[in-house]
Length: 90
Image (cartoon, rainbow, N blue to C red):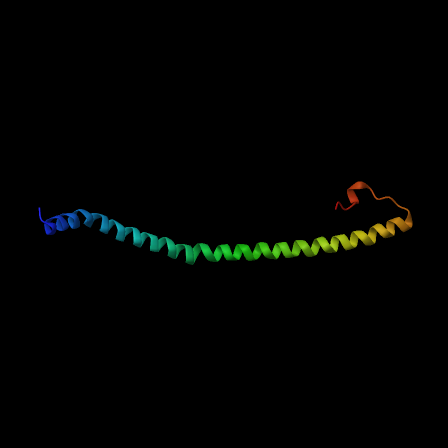
């Protein structure tokens, strides 16, 4: 068997693998397109929404604490004790 015969035989044996590799590349390209066009925008939207809720939570928490400080000082001046269900847990 000459080197050229061996190369020809090897190329024939590898041809189905090369064809399969091309199919995998096409499939991978489709997956990548799906990820970029469908999944990524929805993930970005979800992240933006969650960040918005986090910012609102921080603002509301700060406002609740300020209001609690005001109410607590008024209750202390008036000498009243609020029921436990109306106190703010920190």
